[in-house]
Length: 181
Image (tube, rainbow, N blue to C red; front, side, top):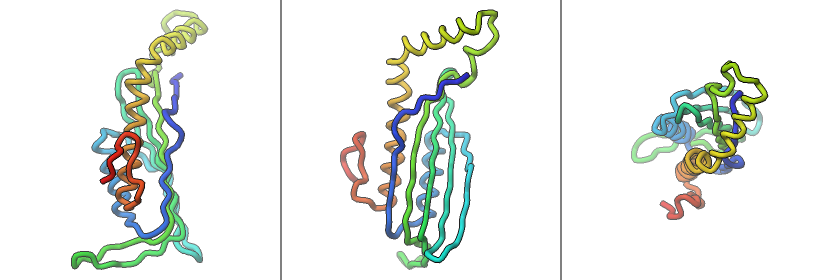
């Protein structure tokens, strides 16, 4: 059985104001492709119209195989509400602008032994196999932490920063990228 290790607490982007859904959606899709997340699944896409505007909930899962031992999994939950759409002319072109609230939650998990190498029937006692797996991960934790956990955490902060920049937020920087653009 694989081991799922969350790399950080969920990262939030909360914004209220004017923004472009097309820009945010294209940014997330292109970021996933540029970072080699080949398995991209939209688990949920629910929209309803109410008195205060449009409400949409979207959940995206993306996976990336890193080594034969580790795989990265990113979940992106997007909640949009109180949205009103309008057309704005920018540089002589008409663009759709959304006015409302948006919350994006990013979570990342490193999945170790996703191929089940420690679970294969090797003729060893199952209890011994489990102890061997636990021991292996314990002695290699520092290496796994610096190689995989830190890398995925930095990637998540990078995506959060890009989303903040697309929303023109003032806090569009992270500990990994102090200089604001």
